[in-house]
Length: 477
Image (cartoon, rainbow, N blue to C red):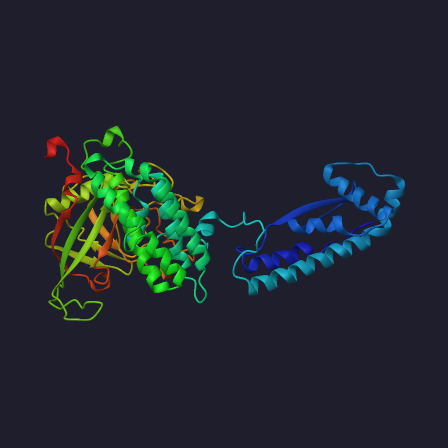
């Protein structure tokens, strides 16, 4: 008996064409009725469970068992089963066609009404780059301060305290009724770790900083703006005061973590030991003037100013070679008097600086969860790799690529990244994430960045803090 071609596959194909980002992949099932006739059905994986739920008499069970035994390369059926097969194949085929049509309609409705994959459906069809870029659950730091705090290689107990409190930042964004019970639990957990692990926390601080560390620890646990204060505001259900106390507590945590990390936690590759390097944090202050003689307008209002100040924190913990080269350029005055050039997404330093000024530093990126940077290697965002210092933060500072090879950063050209959601995936990641050596963030003067235009000038750039962390090779002192 010949079986006419069914429309099941075509129906699903039409549904799939609407958007491959929502619909589950198809599974092809070849069902052979006899050695000369085969039938191809395309149904979603989950539809397979329907067959096990069909109420059937014994001969119907034998029929279905016989048909699906072909999937396991079984070739024998009883004569009685073959007779029953001839009688029931048309009904089974109609059932498959109706199932396919029903699934097609359901998938089209889902596509039109649901912007995200359904829970439990296999998302393996979705390219992993899009899965990361478009995931609404992708949590990346949204400020330079948060990114810098997460980048400090500190005591594990301090990181546990920090992680518990960082979660409050997300909980505070919930509108209307906030989960104060969850917040209280997080703070109590952090406070318990701080009290129980006091000796471990203080033991990680160098001897010459113990007294300072003990004072900061006391402020964190019992001082004004510390964990006890934060706990009280949560019980009062005052979100504004909770936000202020949270920021204060996180600041204490960052101070303790910086004391626990007096240098690099890894060894540089031997071939890079003669490069300048920054073994901790440093701050660079830029003074910028308008090229056309106009004024900068303070964000909070006030009197327009001729020269605006921008401060950038350099993170040598994650990018010691890149920050070392940049800090040395600043100390040498390489950026004094330099003109700036603007695009929609970045403010770039003048590319006309002599290429012999500065070191040819390899691309340097620290992957999240790793203990040392990768060199000459971009991150594979499509595989879920994210950097410790993300580009997807407004005011991130990174080196441009070298003119010859993207495995190296430019010896001296850098840029301020003007992060914009319209240039990013729904998960908040820039499409250039993991491609550049990010080495710091703008912490003062972010409101100045959008006012900078092509032709504006950096009157001066100075290393105002952290010069002790700059290590220069002996032959270049």
